[in-house]
Image (tube, rainbow, N blue to C red; front, side, top):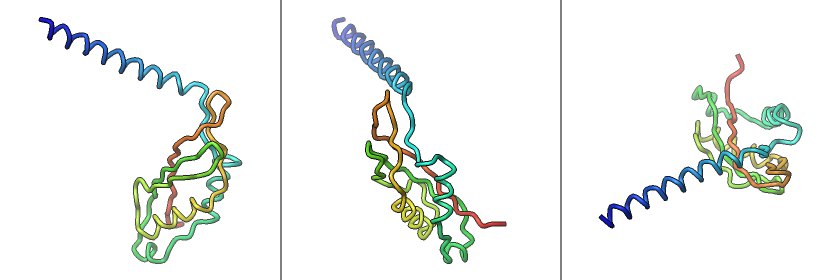
Length: 130
């Protein structure tokens, strides 16, 4: 009987912790501004288009699509820990990483008026002009 009661108490405690964690996560999204490229999204895509090179091996192979990336923008706006989440083609994956290393500092994410580090996901598209 004592053992059943103890399991019941642990179950309730676990549920309470999980519920509080979910509520905390929802509350923390209020007052949060995402990290952004200087000048906004249009300037980001202009930057990528200006720097992007479609490698001949990928053209010959007829490869089109997106390289999905994730990176960290620290409190100073510096991009770190760039990862390819979904590769497309080896030379295009390398090209996407090269572009990321050329990027200027970003405007860091803000939480309640203070700069905070944040993860950002970005797709770099490689499509033929038709």
